[in-house]
Length: 223
Image 1 (spheres, rainbow, N blue to C red):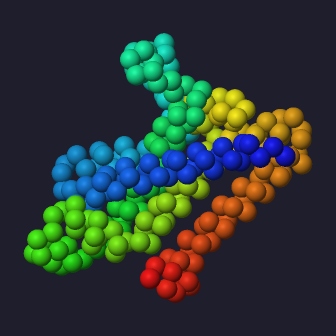
Image 2 (spheres, rainbow, N blue to C red):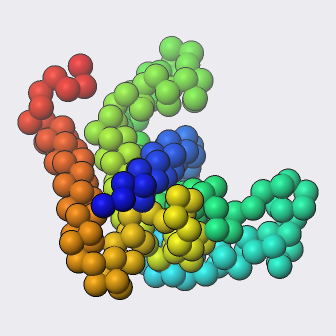
């Protein structure tokens, strides 16, 4: 079994999760506090990857980032960025595709914080961002862990989006899910089974840790 697709998969998942964590916190914070009429529109847009077929998102990414279109041509000519059939393109697509898996748990956690805790922080002279970073986020560690793990695991399991935007380039865009598909097409079931077992074992262990921690089976983990 070639380990390169697995290593590329976990590299993609790690980079995507780190970037998502930074992006999702302000989005979740705004959504948890907003009473604007456009809030449902924003929530619907964030949640679209949950219901849209991955190939639909992948197709539109492919069209948008193509050098034959205005946006893709501008990225290529003015910024020197090529997202089609490249690892950076996989990262961008994965961020959008996994966005709700990071935003929703954090938004739910922030919405569940007592207003008295937040107001007490304001009374003590803390700004909104100081309150978020020093008071609110420490209160929702289980929600943060859930968002991180779900985003990581979801990125590991991507297929349609990465195939459309990245293709099947060994060492560059060929992740484990595509490697499994290739091995099945070649009737090489032993290799496909090996890839699948590794992904199954790792994702199961990651999810198990989340349930153990959030279920308080591992007491003192957050101390």
